[in-house]
Length: 455
Image 1 (cartoon, rainbow, N blue to C red):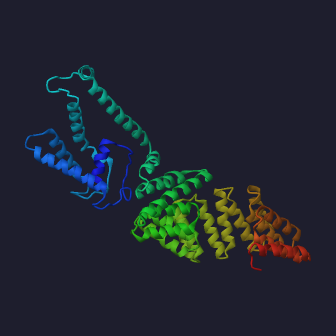
Image 2 (cartoon, rainbow, N blue to C red; image 1 turned 45 degrees about the horizontal axis):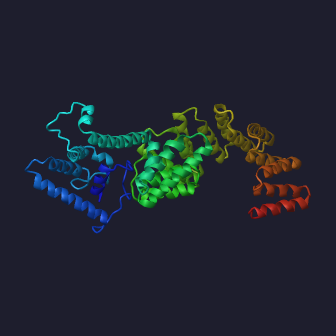
Image 3 (tube, helix red, strand yellow; image 1 turned 90 degrees about the horizontal axis):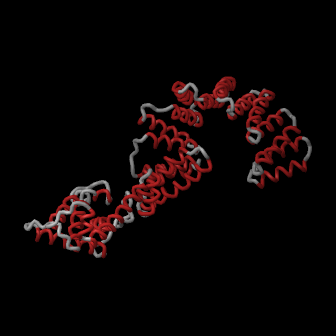
């Protein structure tokens, strides 16, 4: 059937695609009409070539030339890494062109043996009908060549076209989905456009693995897309499917998988994958060590966390995230003074680092230096007025200072911005209760329960 498809593409090269792999050309039995038609065609050509070989018949030569050259790319003589490809006909098409030209000339009784045609005008003068038909054929093939060349403008334009020509090819869906994710979404700065690209890429990658459920590379890039969407549960599922049928030695796989595990609250698995990435990537970048430091901290392995973050800082002394995360590790160790020093360095490198200001405030609050805590929380509000996390922290701090009106003010602001924040309603209830306003206390406790808080 594939050999028959080669004949069809020589005569009628439409539609064209860079790939026809599984399952664009389905397996068929010997009773299938396409197989039988191809078998009869090749059998007839074989008989003709054998019978006419000794007489040096030009068509016999063309048939044998075609057979020899196409056999090298048809997985009959040797196995190649592709089922079918139009580009494989490049050499074989010489035989077809020669045979077609001679057949056409004979059909229109062009006597090229007796008359030497100097140019196209001379040919037109002696054989108008032949020239007209030849011009039509050349125009059609030229038009197809030009339009196809335009589709090769870039990778995305080629894949956008070929997904229509080969809708059942797992490889085309993988290539298109991967291009959208890797070449498009990961480089897109507009968050809305990025999410749209990720969703589109996932659709094609999912289609690829539906066609070929063992397609590990497609699962890998699907995992990357889900990770970028912060859908870590589905990212992990994709990465685990990618491991089933392939042993990976690509550090980028382990980096992406490690981040998905770590971000999903599985720090030990994240640590394992990132350490594997370092094993395969001798020049491991600072971001690997930064993430490794985060996950060691999440796992309660503070010494290892500080060691990893220190390596990150050694590689990039201006990495504000590494200083911030080092501060977080010291804060987890209840060493708030040192934590504040590292947050200060992070802020020095990035003056609008709201998380660093917030955690500085948290550290002062843990040290019961509430005025200083509020000072740093207010710096966040100056940069991000609707930051509900910090507004909530200010409310908690005022509550600790027994400044109940201020606590109510900030908890209320949180509920106005985030009506679904159950903890804000709960703390409003506590504050109202402490000032003796039982009615408002019960009202807010009820709202917290409605939002799913078990109190």
